[in-house]
Image 1 (cartoon, rainbow, N blue to C red):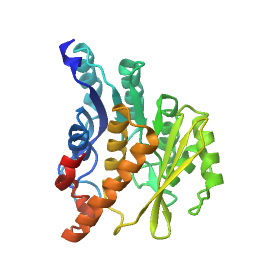
Image 2 (image 1 turned 90 degrees about the vertical axis):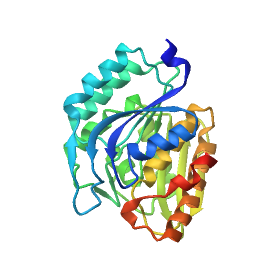
Image 3 (image 1 turned 135 degrees about the vertical axis):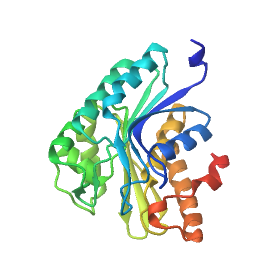
Image 4 (image 1 turned 45 degrees about the horizontal axis):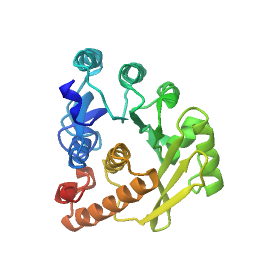
Length: 274
C-alpha cells in the first residue's frame, strides 16, 4: 500500500495540550527523527495532572473503532510505543492493537508508567498494576523506572538498588517476555543512571549529571527517542546515551529559562539536532 512507503511509529498515550508530556512530546520528537508518528489517544487533557486544575475526557470508548480504521487502511508500523494507560480496559485494547499490527518488522516499546519513589501514582491501584504485567509478553523493549520494575516483579522497593539487584530484576522481567530492558532514572548522588539489560550480554550503565528538579514529560522524551533510534537501527546502548545526553542538554536550557517544573522540557529549541 502507498501508505506504507514511509516508516511509521504508533504511539498509544494520552494527549495534553499544555505541559509537554505524552503525545504532545512524542509527536514532534519522533517526527524530527525522520519517522511518521501516528498517535492513538487514550484520553485528552487540557494540561497534565501535575497542575492544580485541568479538563480531561476519557477516550477508551473510541479506541477500538479508531484502530479499526487504521486496520482498514492496512497501515503497518515499524514501531509501537505505549505510555500511560488508565484502566484494565485500556490494557486489553492495547493487547488487541499489538495482535492487529505487530509484524516481524515491528519494534514494540512498553513504558509501564505506574509510579515513582516506591509508590503507585494516585490514579493507579493494585488491580491496574497487576493488569500491566499482562503486557510484558508483548514487549521487545521495556523501560520501567526502579519503582515500576519492583512492582512488576513483586519485589520490595529499595531506592539504592545495586547492579546485582538491578540485573536480577531484569532477569525476572525478561523471563516474562522483553529481551531488552532499560531501568531509567536511577538516582546516584549528583548523577542519574540508566541500567541497560540485553539478554545474553553484559549489562551497560550510563550516567549523566542531574540537572535541576524532576520535570514532567522527561520520561516521554526518553522513550520517544529510544523508540525512534531503535526503529532507525541504532543499537540500544547508543540510543540510551543519545537520549540521556539530549535530555541533559535540554534541561540545562530549561533551567536557564526558569520554567516551572510543570511546563516540562523546552526541547523545541533543539529538535533540529535530532
